[in-house]
Image (cartoon, rainbow, N blue to C red; front, side):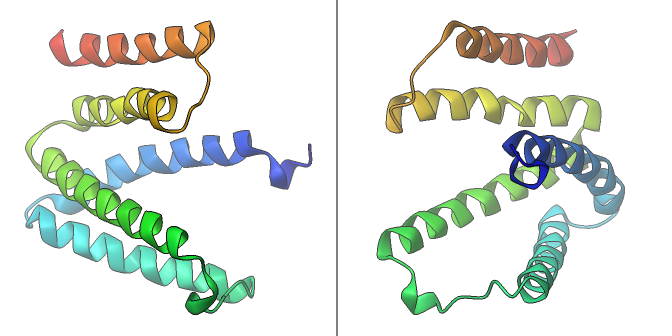
Length: 143
């Protein structure tokens, strides 16, 4: 598989940037309203994403997108926004070292939702990994 097409490379990049998000977010939310911090972050994401689309010449007419793409992207956007609002408020109130691992329980939730709603097939490594993620988050928060 070509490096630019490797899902693993992009998944590792996502993890690295998520870690930086936690640290920078904790520093940025200090002394300001967490909802305002989320709004500022969202505007920056909009500008950066528009810049990438422009540089790569990947803009498409929204009218050409299927309705189900619109529906699920809007629902995803709502879920993302609510996640970010909760995340930044949690960062304002708690330590990154505890907030970030709890946030990563999203991985376990995603596994369950993918099995139930997307028909993905369970496997022992998947189930054991999901259980270990939950156990790790519990250890970090409870001890």
